[in-house]
Length: 123
Image (cartoon, rainbow, N blue to C red; front, side, top):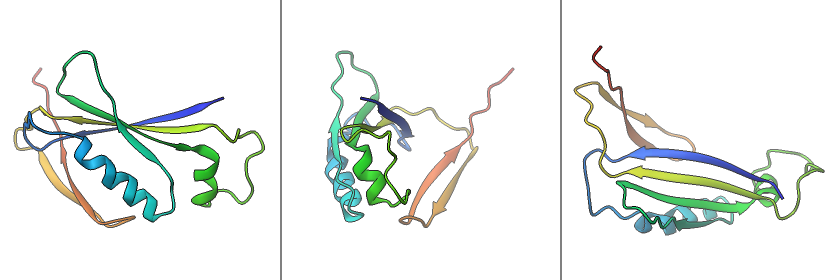
């Protein structure tokens, strides 16, 4: 069985030692469920404490490909139990961007905004 995995890395706008990714996982499942994608989202428990909160979004690859209609016919080599995993990572102690950041807005597939920052290293 093959597993396709992708990482999505995010940073908070400011340090928050009380941040808990669990509070967002049910919303992720519900939002993707609104698009008829059956996924599970679960926090990753680590043995070493770090400022990175992690979680996985998992689903059946073939079911998702059929649901989002990216292919007209199922790929013959896709096993029915093949998994698609997306790893979310949130940095709860982000670096400070000294004035080189910008708020960007996207409207599709749902409206949202994010801060894009560029960190310039001194040489």
